[in-house]
Amino acid sequence: MIKIGIVGSGADKFTKESELEARELIDEILLNKHEEVTLISGHSPVGGIDIWAEQCAENFNIPMDLKIPEQHTWDAKYGYKQRNLDIAKDSDEIHVILVDKYPPNYTGMRFNICYHCKVNTHIKSGGCWTGIQAKRLGKPVYWHIIKNER
Image (cartoon, rainbow, N blue to C red; front, side, top):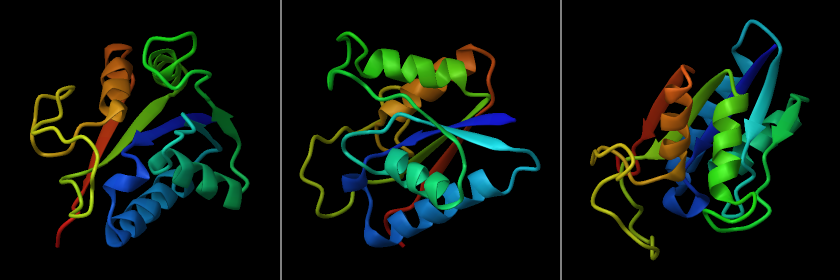
């Protein structure tokens, strides 16, 4: 049994085309292992990668271990920080799925770089922070960057 953490960008960061690509990638990650899989997800309230991974797991009867934040803030009692640490700790491997750029219709906060990774090859995501924590714990972490513009 392998526990796979899948984290990444929220739904509002994707175009219709990049969402489809992300969903196909999630299917590939969860369905192409040669052993039984459990999905570990943070059940993000903004949708996106977490929820799409959960939908895939549900469609294919893959067990899930959901790390649902009790508070929708970083440092609160079982907020995002503790939830992300639990994903990093409990996963055997983590996949961080991000987009390279904000979509044209995105109206939220924008950053010039991912300040977690200190790069401008993808947008900022708490998924990166989670991946970095997993790497510190010696877990394999895979970053997948999906292009929002073709």
